[in-house]
Length: 171
Image (cartoon, rainbow, N blue to C red; front, side, top):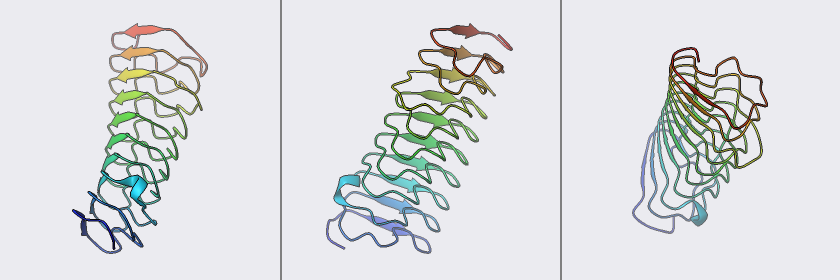
């Protein structure tokens, strides 16, 4: 391994990484793909966290299968089991909670805090959605520039809604 300041703990943690720096990879199969120097500054903690990562830099994944499909996405933060689990090349997404932003593949600049918040979102755009609360914005698939705050806020919205604000439980 070339590069320095790396920590690998766990069965197959860091996998076949040969050249990278400033990585912290902890957990069975965490960061198990061929991580390159383009992924410097990455932290993966949990079984299969960032398992597919090759070149996305400055990602933080904490939890079972958090950001596990991410290979080139960068500057994403995922905390929770399955959070941002389908993201492959999304940029600057933040998810916290079980399956938050769980089906997002390529969407950028989304923020989801809460159990299954923005769970079904999956658009290849700079979406700028924000959802806070259990199931907030859960049904939104491709809409942009939405804000949902509260338990179940905007959870039954049409999948293409854009430019909305929903505040309150069930709003």
